[in-house]
Length: 244
Image 1 (tube, rainbow, N blue to C red):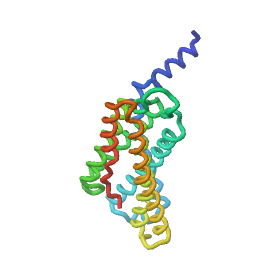
Image 2 (image 1 turned 90 degrees about the vertical axis):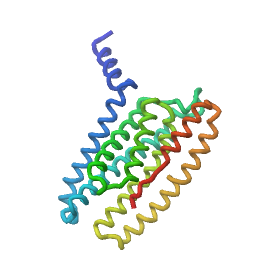
Image 3 (image 1 turned 135 degrees about the vertical axis):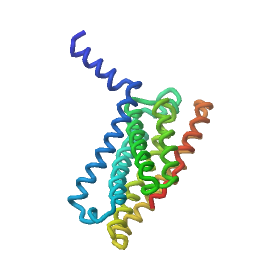
Image 4 (image 1 turned 30 degrees about the horizontal axis):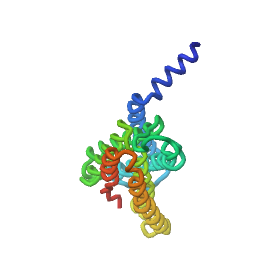
C-alpha cells in the first residue's frame, strides 16, 4: 500500500469515523457560534448606528440572536437535505429507519449540540437578562434530545424533522431586531410578521402532523425502538421559548 493510500485511510479514520465525529462536530459548533458572535459585534458596531446606543445586555442579546439565526439557517438546510434529499432514510433500503445514521447526519447534529451548549452557557451566565427559565428548559431538552440521537444513532430522521422547525427562528429574531431598532411600525415589521405566521403554520404545525403520521407508519419496523422514538420526538418537539 502506498504512502498516499495510508495517509488517506488515516485521515478517513481520524476525521470521518463515527466514534470521532462527536469530538470534532461539537467543538466545531462551539467555535462557529463564538465566531459568529464576535463577527456580529464587530460588524454591527461599524454598520448599524443604533447598535452603539444599546445597553451592554442589549448588545449581548443582539449578538446572541445573530448566533441563533446562523445556527437556524445551518441546521434547517442540513435537516431539509437529510429528510427530503438524502437517500439515507429512503424506504427503498432494508432496515428500520429509526436506527439509520451516517457520518454527515451525525456531524450535523454535533454542530447543533455545540450551538445549544454555547447558547445555554450564555443564558445561564447572563441569567435572566437574555432568557428566563423557559429558555433554560428548552435548551436542556433540545440538548439532551439532539445529543442522544447523535451519540446513539437512533431517531436521527425524526430529530432532523423536528429541527426543520428552526425555520421560524430567523424571522422571530428579525422581529426583535426591528423592534429594538425602533422599526416596529415599519412595513418590514408587518411583512416579517406575515412571513412568521406562514412559516410557523408549515414548520410547527403541518410538519409535526406529518412527523407523527410518519412515526405511526414505521412503528412496525421495530416496536421497541418506535416507542423510544416517540418519547424522543415528544421531548424534542417541546418548544417553550418565547422569542417574542
